[in-house]
Amino acid sequence: MKAFQCLATVAFICVLQGMSSFCFAATVKVTAYTAGYECGHVTASGVHLKKKHCWVIVAFNPRLAGKYKFGDRFRLEIEGKVYIVEFQDRMAPRRRGKANKAYIDFLLPSVEACRQFGVKRGTLTKIE
Image 1 (cartoon, rainbow, N blue to C red):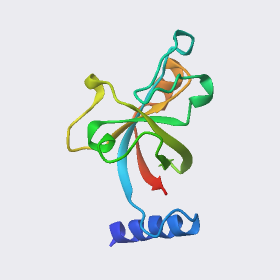
Image 2: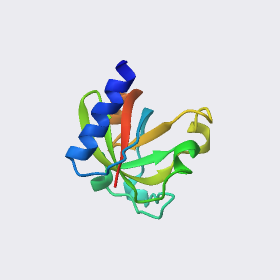
Image 3: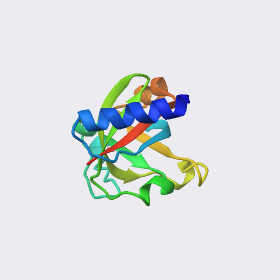
């Protein structure tokens, strides 16, 4: 019963926010990564990373990346905090996790911020 209530709540939120009449929410494992902004790091989609992209860009593992296209926007909720994020990168091969699980990497401003963030569970909902 709890799972149904949770999905019903997510669907209701999607309708309230004008997202879509059909809304899919996935539970994801969220880790963090950072980039050498001065070194000209470029995402898999071709975005040249800058500090302004922190807390906005996410990288998906192959399971999720195959379902969406670069530039798709999502609502990511982690521990009650909501972020509007964009899929612009793919996870590094060594960080992809199990093929049947949904993993994302959240772009943060520093190694220290990544350490503090740790590993969390989140809810990812596509914004139409």
